[in-house]
Image 1 (tube, rainbow, N blue to C red):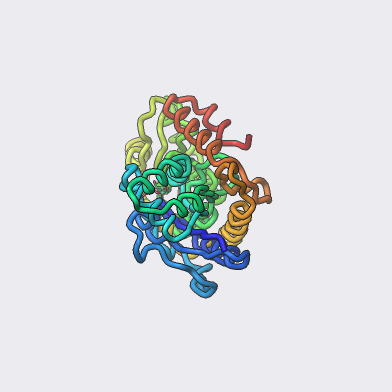
Image 2 (cartoon, helix red, strand yellow):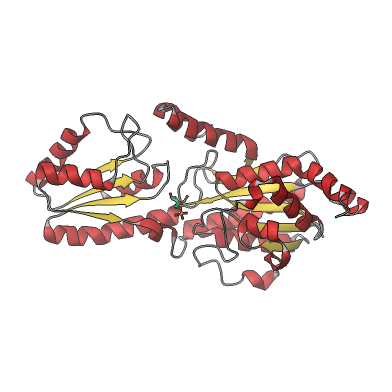
Length: 363
Ligand code: F6P
C-alpha cells in the first residue's frame, strides 16, 4: 500500500487527536501503510523512533483527549534546507510520499515549501548516494493535505479551525465562574483571552457570556474609548447591575496600533470609576482539556477527507487544505489559503482593518 504519514505541528489544540485517529483509520481502511511522525517537523528531521508505523489500536481511546498524543513542536531545523533534506531522506527511505499535516498557517506554509522542493531534495540525496535511482523514481511525487488545528480561528478558507469550539467552551465556563464571585463583591473583571492577532475567541466569548465590553484587534478603539467605556460601566451599575465583565483579546490594539492590555483597562476603570477591579488571564487553560463534541467530529470528518484527497491525487494535484464551508468538509488549494491568511496579517499591519475582516470572510 501507499506510505502515508500524519503529524501535528505548532501549538496544540483540542480535537487534533480525533483528526489523527481518523487519518490513521481511514488510511488503514484504504490499504495504506500509515505512520505517525512524532514531535512535528522536528521528528521528521530527526527520524529514528520519531517515525513509527501506526495500527488500528494505536489510536484507540484518544478521541476524548486534549492536546496531541503524537507531540508537537515549533521546529527551527525545518526552516533550513539542510533540515528539509534530512526530512526527505527519512520519508523516502520509509516509502512515505503522502503527508497529512495538522497545524496552523506556519506549519502549512512549511509543508507547501517542502513539496515545491521535493524534486530537488531527491536529486541531492541521489547525488550524495543517500538514495538509489529506483527510490528517486518510485517516490518522485509528494502529496500533501493539510488541516487547520488552532484555537485562534485565524486561518482563511475555513469557517472553523479544529480546537476553536473547545477553547470557547473553556472561556465561557471560566467567565461563568468569575461572574459568581464578581457578583458577590460587586467587582469588575477584566478577562484576557488568547487568539494572537485574531479577535474571534474574544468576540464570540463576549457575545455568549453577556460581557459589557470587548476589545479586539480587528476593531481598534477610537480615541475617546476611555469616556465611552466609563459611561457604559457607570450606566450599568446605576441600573442595578452588580458586576462588569470586560474581555480583552491578547492582540487588542488602539487605532495607533498600541496594545490595549488588561492592565491598561484596569487602570482606566480604577482611576475613573474607583471600581473594585481584578484581572484574570486565562492563558493555556483555553488550549487544554477535553475537546468538545464539535471539535471531535470536525477532526474526524477532516481527517477522513484529507486521506481521500491524498488517495485521489494525481502527479500534478496541488496540496490542499481540508476546510469547513458551512457544514461541508471541502478541499481548497493550500497555497491560496496561506496567501490570503498572509494578506490579512499585512492588512492588519497596514491598519486596514476593514480589508482584514473582508479577507477573513468567505471568498
Ligand atoms: O496559536 C495558539 C496560541 O494559543 C495563541 O492563542 C497564543 O498567542 C499562542 O498560541 C501561545 O503560544 P505558546 O503556547 O507558545 O505560549
